[in-house]
Image (cartoon, rainbow, N blue to C red; front, top):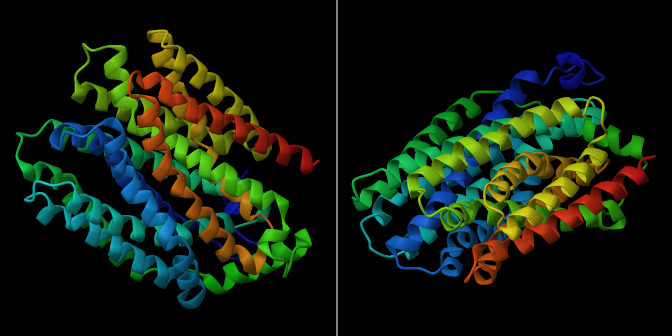
Length: 406
């Protein structure tokens, strides 16, 4: 498959350069989310929190998504993708920089507030980036394109835990250690914002392609709620984000319980190089696999294998369970972008609305860490029952979509 056939529409508009800029946004928010998994363990010790209470780190972020998703969709429809994304970048940078004053107050509340503001920015960015990634080329390659963009997100998920582990767990115990990684991220966000402001995003062409895709699917003008596949996609996305967030949040806890001889810093490095490394590789390979395997069928296969990994994790079989935990990141890698692409397929002028609703479903990430923390009070392995259920449903969704497209 040539680059041109993936990124050039029927009218000859080449989206490759703006697509690369959109992909850089995936890297930024991947880094921000990766940092959360380090904060979760750090807050348990710094503020004497239980596992369930530390889940409010993720809750502060994902509830920000839930609150902002619909307003973000309205913002995109009113001002367009480019201006909307710029608003999101400014909020992202503001939330990151607020970690500086928060680090001098010995309370988790200012950090939760900063994370909430940061998440509002991320939500706005994702509302614009996902439909741009799926729309920048032929409809047939939408899932492949968004998986390519999501590979950049995988790089961010590697950098986040490594950066957080080095500057937070590897610091000298100064309260300002918490602010250091967010200062770096905030500065990068502002630089990307300047570059984004000077780059043309072909929004008129994107809107025309969305209308043509809806006509081809026979869904032009129909409500998003009249399409059964979209309702299934909402549930699958909610469960996926909850599962991924919960697994990342309690990765360090699980590894330390499985092998107490491993240090916290080493556990974060395992998360960064091992778990997130496989996550990145999975996203790269998924876009290649989709040349031969339909996205829905691949989603069903990976969902089934991820559920199998969770059974081994729950069993706590030593090295075998640790290997299964690592492998689950590989199988999770393609789920979010593929569920998104399947959900917005043929939406046409309803794409922005569908996108905002799918992004709202990341609220699953607000609930799963708390639920997993409660289930895992005596043994962290029991907390992984929730991701097991989530992956089973995602496998069902993929199978249902695969059969529907025959």
